[in-house]
Image (cartoon, rainbow, N blue to C red; front, side):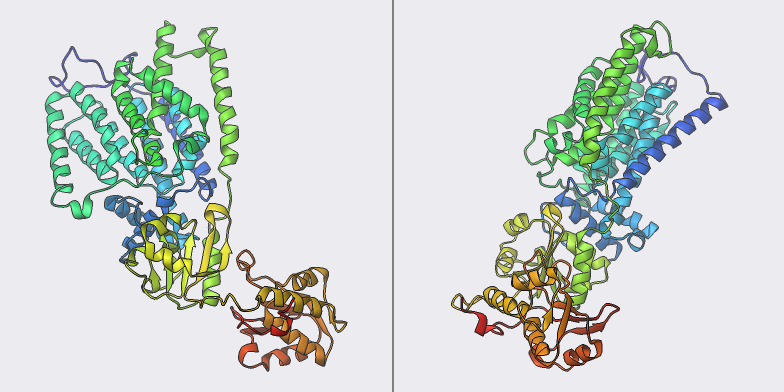
Amino acid sequence: MAQHSRGTTDQGRSPATLPGPAVTGFSAAHRLLSLDIVLALLALAGGLRVLYLAAPAPALPAEASNVAHAYALGHLTPFTDAGGAGVSPFGWWQLSAYTMVTDAFGRSASALAAVREAVLVAALLSALLLWFLARRLGLTRWAAAAAVLLLAASPLALGLHRLVVVEHLAVVWALGALVLVTTPGARIRHDALAALCLLAAVLTSPLALVFLPAAGWLLVRRAPARAALVAVLLNLGLGLAFGPAAGVLRPHLADGGRPSIADWVALDPAWAVLSTMALVAALAVTALRPFAVSGLLLVAALFVPGVPDTAVLALLLPLTPLLLAAVVQAVSRQRVPAHRWHPGRRPGTVPAAVVLLAVVAAGWSYGYPALHPTTDRAGPLAGAQEWLRANASGARVLVDDGAWAELAKAGWPTGLLVPPAACAATCPPAEWAVFAGGTAEVRGRHPAVGAALAEAGVTAVFGTGDRAVTISRLGLPAADPAAPSEESARTHAGEALAASTRISLPPDASAVLRAGHVDPRLIATIAALAAIRPVSVGAFPAVPGEDPAGQPRRRVLLTAAKDAVAAFYTGQRDLFRPSSVTETADGVLVTYPLFAPPGLLVPFSSP
């Protein structure tokens, strides 16, 4: 199918396309049909990825670092990550360029969603380039569509393509290079562009080096002399990037960690089985052998300690659907004595296809629900931002990589955000700490952060599990072990208050009060108000995030005698002065600031 320049291809060399009839041209109807198929596949791929853009699991720790670097570059702000997330200056520049050109940070609910948009666009470009590469290799229109469909709709692909890893960008460059190498009648300019694309892929991710054997093999088959030119250009670029310009261009892989290969394969077990079969079978097909070798090199990288499985799978993802579709087409053409692929001509082909579809459907029926689709584009960090804005505005905050990007996007001055990398022997003075997810890895890399967090008091928690965002108060005085229990005092005082005949309480408010979950200042002021007039308590509304942290409720809704209640609380002074007294349609909402002084309920401390 491919056309070659005279004198550039040896007659004895294997062709670069699958065996099939020569095609001299395409009618307008065929071109329109191909265009319709491509647009439909791109619409399917884009729609599914938008739906799963905010899917919470599986999670990737290095994703937060890439998002923060993209934000910092786009806003000319210095940032140093916590370490272990890999280094890809060229990849970060690409992500940042997309967000600046499209104003993604201004449009998106979170910094993470903004940068994930760039990955979504990269996924669509990969699907488009995979179509062109499949057609360049001689796959029929329907075989090429099947390959793109697997890439577009696999739960494994959806899970990978929502994560901000630079390997998705490297795939686009690598596929672009392979499309240029397999272009019919390719000229020197195509080879030069292919060399630049390969260079860009390697600078984005070092793992993209595995595509060099496939590209070089195809070039040698087609034009050995021009293959040498590509090798010279590529080596020159790599020499500069890893030599004099290494400080600003040299990439490094992220540390290995979760999610593991088992976590990913669980989303689509059929993909793992069929990919293995396709990689092995493709070695027997001359036109596919270069791609099979690169794919097997990627599989071998999965067994290298320290290599992140997510990065390897991101690069392997477009190869295996291509090889699977090509192998099926090659086998079908050998079995059917016609030039076109007609699976229904053999009695055994239809049952085999049905079994194959059933296996894929069974895997996908588990994989799609496991991705947990959601319309929440903000996540727990949005709640943490609101809490900080209301309770710690203008404070210096110790943050991890994920919280740094989100708080910076929300308008928090970056000079008041202290990343873990700024903590050498000790951390700079900070009043609060905000960490998204676990802190074990950060504590291990930065002992000063661990020491600061060990003495911190958890004040609010948003989200659950790996996505939980914890807000802690730093610098609190250590509790006196000999001091009476504050919780016990709140419990006894709350029981006494709930038993008063001058206070009316709904059952849920009474349960909160008797359990000792109400702020001592509220207990004391409600008791003082009840001595003056009967009190009607509507509820003790929780401040979002504080109940999971074990903080007592510091708000009360009083539903009777609004004017008298408002005057009573606005007249309070010193320790008992509320932070806000607000009249609502249901009553007067009284809110106290955080951290009641100890000892306010000493008479109730004894058991």
